[in-house]
Length: 255
Ligand SMILES: [Mg+2]
Image 1 (cartoon, helix red, strand yellow):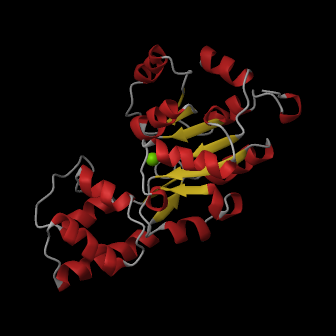
Image 2 (tube, rainbow, N blue to C red):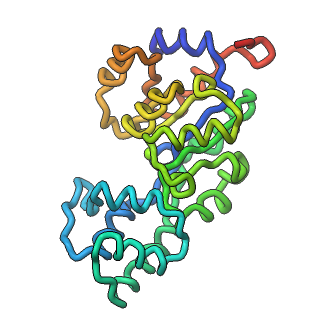
Image 3 (cartoon, rainbow, N blue to C red):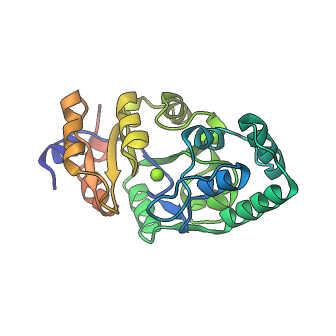
């Protein structure tokens, strides 16, 4: 365990643990749905990533993550108008099929149910801050075990707030819903820019889950050179248990 992170948790108790959704609590199984959506709707051939899925452009990704529409046809028309693409019947049909799959290809990581239960048992409030388009949200939050731990107020989504992480507005909305200050929150996520740097810049503390070991741990350590509190680096989400168990109990913690 990292000494400076141990010190942080021994001397602090978050009021709320905020979770990122994709690649932290779960995944859209074996897919890059927004890249596939752009490939269907746009006439351009997109570059393909290491996992063979098309990579969406930044402007299309942002459009998807901050658009509140849950109607598939309206969404496809809005996207096509915004980006100057022709929407013909075949593209619309393919887009409908994609969104159908999107709702049915959700998988939570196996440790998630027990871990959320553990965090709840220690008395922490929990929320979700997710960069998400609207389509899978009902299946994700109503039809999985997530519904046992989070009610709709606890789930802050970019399509609803119309800002995506790392924008401060989405972290601000999360704090507003729980009635807490940023320094009373821990953000747990897999994305160094969106989750970790976004949360730190807003004044939260942060923990990075790097299951696939894509991030250089030294880069995480170096964030404290910018004056940020130490960031917990994990390759297994269950490591978080050891650190949260160090926090003072709520009965003895007076900030
Ligand atoms: Mg993520």
